[in-house]
Structures are given as structure tokens and as C-alpha cells.
Image (cartoon, rainbow, N blue to C red):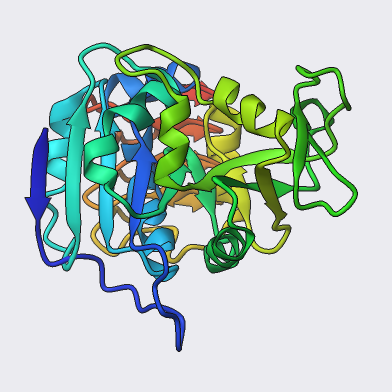
Length: 322
């Protein structure tokens, strides 16, 4: 376990907020197999989104809702997380890394940080999610419900991802993936939720286990809460297509970082170019993402590509990870 007490993210809380939930757990231990070869270089939550690691955007969203204390579980490429938490711009933040030599799954990972959680409620955020939803609404709903868990749900999206069934009030979960045989799903689970410390009593100690069985136990008892938040953006960036699409549809600042080097005669169209990246003269980069420090050679042509390696890219490429 590595604990970093730095100065923290400078993200103001909403006016008048009393910060009812001060701590958050970011699930960062996944292998990111659907994003390979990007995740051969970085853990999935550290893959850059508009020049900043996805985990940075997650921490900013949680901090905006009032949290200032973070736990992150790690497994794949853990040294990259040690570099991340030493960033100069992460100030006023207490970050604790919990390394898992053996992946504990979502439930096991949550149980593993039980001593860190203490007696306060916790905001849990999947590490491969980007969201601008109002998480303060989730926190308020959880506080007022008195229930052990409150899930954040979305109405719109892929029908195949609608695994959550709700009661008539739309505030209680009755079934997940039709596992209880009660109802088919109508809503998408966002991967963001709040839990009370008492919930961890339902997760066995020292086991590799998903959190879903414990959720289903609560659903049987009518104690699994929910809030539907369709405001703002919500994107699962767990695969290549969604990662590229996010860079083409989101507006998170300058697409070409001021510290990127774009030589005269290079053509950049609908692409995101990271800091210290180099695009040589005559290169054409369309609908692509070039990671920080990557290099595209003279007269190379890229379309729909992600450049993530340290090797300079030559030639013509379409829909490739380089």
C-alpha cells in the first residue's frame, strides 16, 4: 500500500455544499484487455483523454462533488500509478494506492480497503468511465434514502447494456440481468455508486468476488437504491471504438496541445495531438489520437489511428493502433 498526501486537486465544491461524502474509491485494477495494445503501455484508467489521464478526469469529477480523499486499487503496471500520484498538479488530495498482486474483482477490491473506509460512506467510480453527471445528486439521493447502496443509472444507450430493473418509483432496483427472475432490465448501470460501510459485511473477506451477488442480496430485501441521472455526458471508454469516439465528440479543451510540435506542411484533421508529440512535415493525421511524446514521420498518413508507442510511425495506416 502506498499513501501519497499531496496538496490535491483544485476543484471547487458546488456553492453551499456541506460535503456529506468526503471519500471516493476508483476501481483501477482491471487489465484493460479490450483496449490492448494501448494498455500494454498504461493501466486503462491512465490512458490519456484529451491530454490528461482518464483517472485525472475521474478525480476531478469526484472532487467537484465534494470528495477530497481517494483510494485507488492497482494491479497491471502498478509503477505507472506511482508516477501518476506524484503529479505536481494533484494538490490538496489524500491518495492511497492499494496494490492487488492477485486481482480481487469489484467486490474483493472493495472489501480489501475496508479499514481505509472506516465509518463513512463512500463514492465508488469505475476507472474506465468518463462522466459529467452531477454526482452531487447521487450523493444527496443516497444520504436521504438511508439505504446501504445507491446505484447511478442511465436511461438511454445500447439495449444490450440495460441490465437493471427498477420499481415503479424508479428509486429501487428489483433485478439485475434478470438474475432473480423478477423483471428484465430497463436501465444501464453507470459504474458509479455510493455505499455505506455496513454493506461490506455482505462481501466475504479474502475472496475474489464480484460486487453483484451482494447487490442482488439487497435487491431481494428491497434495499438496493437507485437514481436515474440522464444529465451530462457518460461514456464507457473500455474499448477502442469508444475511446476514439470520445475524442471526436467531446469538447474538453484544445485538441492540439500547445506543447505539441507540428511542422510546417503537416495536415491535422479531427484529431487530438498530445503534449511533446511530433508531427513531421508532410504528414497527414485524420480522425486519430496521438499520445504525448509520440512521433509521426514525414509524409506518413494516418486515418482512424491511435499512436501510443515510443517508435516513430512511418507509412500509411488506417484504423490501427501504433
